[in-house]
Image (cartoon, rainbow, N blue to C red; front, side):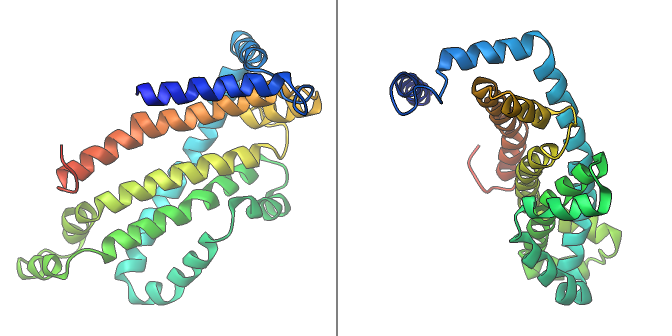
Amino acid sequence: MAQRIGFLVLLTLAWGLAARYEPWQHTLPGPDEVLRSLVALVGDGRLLEGAGRSLWRLARGYGLSVLVGIPLGIAAARVTIVRRTVKPLVMGLQSLPSICWLPLAILWFGLSEMAILFVVVMGSLLSVAISTEDGISSIQPQLLRVSGTLGIRGLRLYGGVLIPAALPAIVTGLKLGWAFAWRALMAGELLFVSGGLGQLLTTARELLDVAQVIAVMLAIVAIGVLVDRVLFRVVEGKVRQRWGLEAG
């Protein structure tokens, strides 16, 4: 912890020095100016309102990605025709950056909430599906044979054996899906006046307010780190301990 705090202090000092001298003197605001902008955004409620709208959009898009991605990953691992046809397509689309979906979203849905939702879903669904498929495919064959010998089939096999056995990989996929969804959301919100954090970035850019741009960027990073540390890191750690993948 002390090392992290020390590194952040040194980074802030270097930032402050860079803001005082050329070539950054007139283009890079110092930490104090960015802090004042951040306090102003919090004080007038714009930051909290924008973060609330962005997180609500993220919850809808990410939730849909999970609802579709996990069954798709299971089907890719267990259903032969899906594994031979859909899996290669999913693997290929995963290499496509989420921002590449923006033009298609605009053509299909216009400048609307649906366009942002589409970008978020496409940004996270594939990661969730691929991680789920990897987890199911990595289950030891002995476990499947024992389950068959005991007569465990159908929904009992999926709910009682396959998903629990693949849960560490699924949780990792959910974590990656969240990160990709958060990035895709920020890209999507830059499309139009949407009332989220992306709008705050666009407004600051139009006003040439570099301090506000950096302040909003820091808020976006803080939200991402907070969700990762508070939610996913805790859940992932407990699952890995429960499955004996790391010490308690």
